[in-house]
Image (spheres, rainbow, N blue to C red):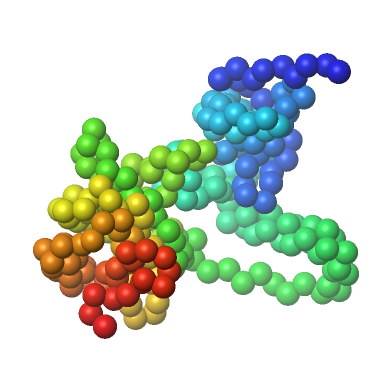
Length: 246
């Protein structure tokens, strides 16, 4: 059996398809390569970020022969933040991709596809995400706490200050959350924030591995009052989630 060629850390690959998660697919020496930021038909200069037995993951650094629906990502963090996968693809083309994926799911389930498809329902392209789990990590070398989605292909938290896809007011408050966590006595024991935004309220659930002090609770109440959000506590599993002010 022929031995698979090892993909170097940097390579030039032709993207053949796009998967349901927004990754381009290519092959190298018998190995499958998933490429973030690349579209079908493009030739991408890639940087490998993760190696697995049967699959490699990479990030497109540059592309040649740009896809007809490629657009410039409006987010300054899109190249490394894992919160979004398709900011470089026009909104209409994204819906086409999702519609095609839905047809595939019908086929895979051996379910007859509908005779008629209704027109797409589409909302705003920004500020639409009302629920999310954000990673938190204390990194003194980067000025303290980081709050955001994970980097692509990594467990590291992306170094971001704002998020264009998170609903108001959360998207503009990541920098505020970073500074707030730095003020807490248990800053190094907070692994995540979970956010939920309704029509009239926004809640931020603080997961903490050590008890919050009375001063910590006071800080969170104060920041929440100033910025129009409510902080809740989570000391353990989901059954420990509770508001500071019932």
